[in-house]
Length: 194
Image (cartoon, rainbow, N blue to C red; front, top):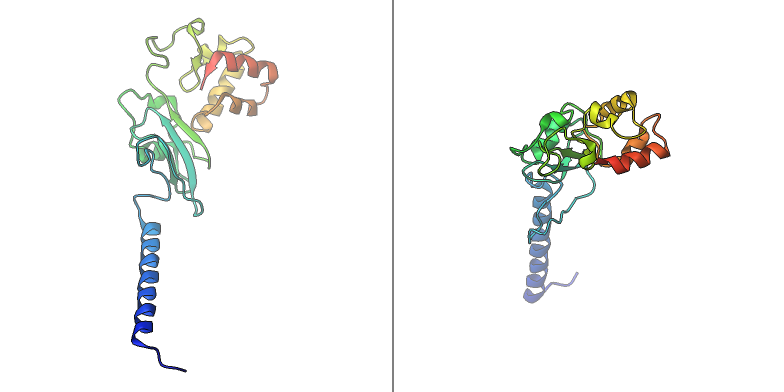
């Protein structure tokens, strides 16, 4: 094997150092506990963008509503709604934590929306359905019963579904409830707000 010149050895040493620096940087970014595998909810310019690292175990959930730092977060398997709210900085002073089942187990891809004490600006909680859509996150059996095609039994089923799933991210999810057909779904879309 021929001997390497001093210049060749310096080039090989520089390449080795560069590879080592890239490897160290890559390892540090994977081990950064602050990133938690997920999300900069505000992006570099505060534009509301987010970034999700793929892979790894756990759940990815979207936390919105009356939390201090809404965004998409990675949580361990078996996490509860209360864990997601805490990960998002906790509830704001306007939050209605009893509007969700805080003990419900999270599912991957779930959206958790912590409702506000006042579902619509300027209207008191419990106002009549004629004043606008009812907030699905805070709706009572009585409020749901005011929607055409929804009786007390279906209203109870909707609240039970909401509690079991830690909230409902969209009206379309209610299609999973037995007894809610296309006509009822249309009435729900008109009478409810997520």
